[in-house]
Structures are given as structure tokens and as C-alpha cells.
Length: 165
Image (cartoon, rainbow, N blue to C red; front, side, top):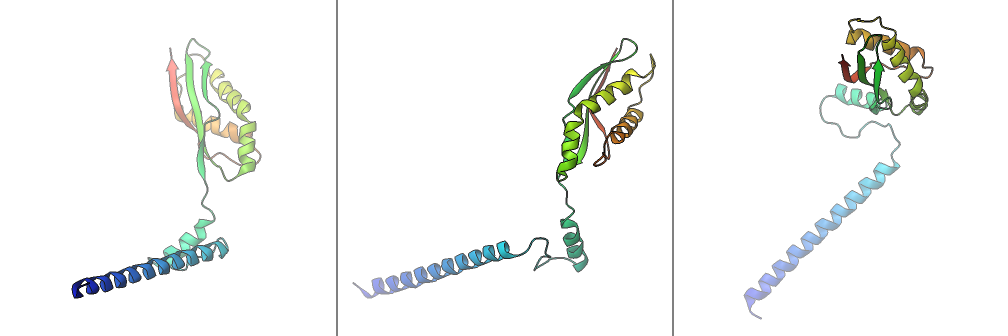
């Protein structure tokens, strides 16, 4: 073997050793960080923060209050005949916290009540009444919340709202 081949072989071995040591150190760091993360108690403040101290405190304080907000679609589409020959077709939805399991279960048990409340509101309107969507939302929201015990609905939305003559 010539001298150039020996030098290239030594350089290859040095590079291979450096790369192998680097990979080994990275694996140790990642494994150590993973073990540390699993052993650390929940709800603790971050060890390293970027940005201002006030923002880090705000983030730490509000991390526990971060709710999983979802839209309740359980009421489905309703077709409600009015006092005259018109028909209202609507779907009522509202946001709720999926983390509150008791309230979520109460909502699921009240689906028929909510559908009846919605239907009663529109059927009680006088014939040829001009339907105000915002007033209808406020009235239905108030009636829904009167029927709930474990929580409150903050807003009601009509994802479909159509009046057929």
C-alpha cells in the first residue's frame, strides 16, 4: 500500500470516529432529556424561556387554564313550521369546553330539550312576524342556560338559517 492510501485510510478512520462519537453524544443527550421530561412534575414553569419574563409568567399561569374548546354539533338541523305557511330551517351550534366532562355529559343529555326549546321559540312567534336572527339567538341562549345546571353556554350560532316562504 502506498503512502497516500495510508494517509487517506487514517483520515477516514478519524472522520468515522468523530462522527460515531458525535452520534453517541447526541443519543445520550436526547435520551437524558426524555427521561428528565418524564420525571419532571406537570405544571412546572419552563427551564429556558425566550422573550420577556412577564410573557413567560403569563404562559405558565395560563397553561393550566388552556381549555379544549369545541363546537357542539349534537342538535343537528331542524325544520320548524311557523304560525303562517313559512318554515325555518336551522342548525344551532355553540362552543363548549371538552375538558369539562360533567358539563359535556349534561349537554348530551339535553339534546332533545334544546331541540324542543328551539322549536318552541319559533312556533310561538306570531304569524307574519319579522324574525330577527340576533334576538332569536339571545332568547334561545337564555332558555338553554335556564335548562342547564352544571355550566353555561356563552354563545349560540346558527350555522344554517333559512326561512322558506
